[in-house]
Every structure is written in structure tokens, then in C-alpha cells.
Amino acid sequence: MKNYKSRMRYAAMAFGRGRVMAAFDIGKARTDCQALYASVRAARERLAEHAQNGTGTQEELQALRDEIAQGTQRYDDMMAAIRMNEQQMADGVAAQFNRQMERREQGRRAAMGALYRSLMTAMPVDADVRAELSLPTTVTTGTADGRVLLPRTLSTEIIDDIVGEDDFLREISVTHVAGLELPTATGTDSADSAHKADGEKAAMAKIKAGTVAFGRIPYAKGVTVPSSLLDGTNTAISAYIDQKHYDFKRDHLLSHIFATSPEAGCEHMSVLGSNVGLATVTGATELDAILAALAALPARVRRVAKVAMTPAKWYALVRTLANGATTLFTKPDEAALGFKVVLCDYATTTLVGDLKTIHLNYDAPIQIERERHALERTTDIVLSTYYDIRVLQKDRLRLVSVAGAAAANEDGGEA
Image (cartoon, rainbow, N blue to C red; front, top):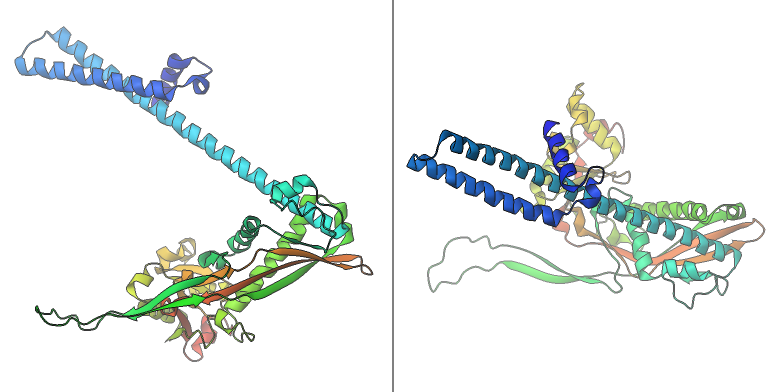
């Protein structure tokens, strides 16, 4: 507190009481600090010279000591004031950026609500709404055919919102590229690690290169909107429709990733699918199986591996390990168990490994359509797009299985 007050006194004296922040010139203050540092260093050199030569009176030596002490204190106060002002400037920039992002988000929500209103009422889309959402100038009404193809940038923002609000989906890879193809390489190093003499042929590593091509799986889901919602604000309309669309899409993605019986044409999207072919590691208990699965992963994968499991299994695991103690419940999973847990209601079969190797790609921008039900006085706002999910490298993931009847005891009877 004493040092803080002295720094504020310095700032007040140097730049005017009551207007410290407004008048503080960081560039000039740094120049003053450099000059003061040079002055203190020169005083120390003179004091050292007197001490070496045995010259100078006691009054002169004490004056040098006082000059050094006062200069050092002023230097410390000036540097502290500089750091304080720099931090406050950085905080101000960050706060301004956050306010701008919040205003932008609020503007986007209101504009989406206005777009939904135009679709529901078959009224023209205002110019400011088109500008806010970067809609093409050709999109002048919501009446022509009752549909609007959103720009790719806005589609990407919506997808980011959908993925960003789920713990598991945040961990996987997501792109928005039409006709995406990604290269893959699988293989092993040579088992023959013996040194070879000159002239002898060294064993070669076996690497197989390939390409994963993403398809176009159609998705369409409608939110039924009552006509009474039009009495609310545009923001309220957007909040109602968007939240339901986001929940529908998240549930759709997760149900396909962890599908035990994938529908035809979607077998490759499920980590449990036989054609994906993930290896299963079995243990006497859930924890034993998880640790065995982690140990079975390649060393480079273990550094980034995470464990996706249901909340019921995780809480049962913590309760068993805590054995009545409460300290384990307050520790992060990595500190307590050595691995990061990702909770997912759909992960009824625990998944271990590098979740980034699960790749979600959206092949087309999002399209918004309306479907009017006059007799029911409702309108379906339909969100449609094309997407695909692929497991790029199956050797980076393991499934967990608990042997025998222990499975029921581990997760409280959950299948």
C-alpha cells in the first residue's frame, strides 16, 4: 500500500492531480526512466571510484548514496506507473473489443430475427438487415420462394455457435469446405532398429498414404413457430428459433457420432460402427479399461488424449475413488486421475484418444426456408445444409469396455 501511494504521488506530481490517466505520456515517461537510470548508474560509478581510491569526504559519499537511493526509488515509481497505465490501457482496449463483439452479436441476433419475421410474414427484407447479415443485394424479399441462402461467413458463425456450446463437439475438428478431401498417412516404423554398416541396406518404414473424401449428407430440421411470436421483438424471435435449431443440430451430430445402429449411408460417421473399426480395450473396471486404453495409444497421442464418457459414469468413478472423502470432488480431473474428461450424454461407450481426429465438415452454406401451416396458425422455419463426419486416423482412438457384470456396477446399472 505504501509503495502504491508513493507511485500515485509521483504520477500526480508529474502529470497533474486529478488527471493522472488522461495526461500520462508513456513514451515520455520511458524516456525519463532511461535518463534517470543513466544518472543512477553514473552516481554508482562515482561512489565506487571514491571507494577504490579512498577519496571524497563523508558528506560527499553520503550525498552520492542519497542520490542513488532517491533515484532508484523514483525509477521504481516511474516504472510502476508505466506498467499500471499500460495495463489499464490494455484493459480498456479489451473492454472496448468485448463491447464491440457484444454489440455485433446483438445486431446479428436482431437481424436474424428480422429475417425470420420477413419469412414468416412474406414481407420484404430491409436493407439494413441485408447489410448486417451480408445478404446478397438480390435478396430483397422473403416472399419469392420462402427461402434464403445465408452467406458462407454467416453460416460459419452459426456452425461455430452450434459446436461451441457443447463440450464434446468443441474437441473435434470442424471445417466448412465444399468437396473437402484430406490426406492421411498410416504405417509403422521398421522393427529392425539395428545399425547397418556401409553398403548394407537399411530397413524402410512402412507408410501408406491415402485421402479421405467427405460426402454430402443432407440435413433439414424445422422449428415450429406460433404466429403469436411475431408480437415479440426481433431479438426474441431469433432467440427462440436459433436456440431450438442449435439444440436440434447438436443432438443430431452427437447421435450419429455415437450411434450403435447407424442408419444406411451414415455408418462411417459412428465411432461405434464396424466399418470404422476402432479397437476396443477391456478392463475389469471402467478405470482399469480407461488406463489400459491410454496405455495402448501411441506415445505422441497420449500427450493430447482425452476421455469422453457420460456424466453418470464419471460421477460413479469419482464416487468410487473418493471412498467417502470430499477432496477428490474439488480437484480437476487431470490433477486427480491424470487424464482430461469430456462429458457427453451420448458417449454411453467411453471413448479414449485424440478427439481431433474426428472431423466434421459442412459442405454447403446454411439455407433457411419457411413452411406455412395456415390452419394451425404456425410456421416451420427450416434449417438445411449438407455435412459429413469422418474418423481420419482410427489408431488415435480406443473404445472402452468393462468385462462381465462389473459394467453394471461401475455405472450404476447403465447399459
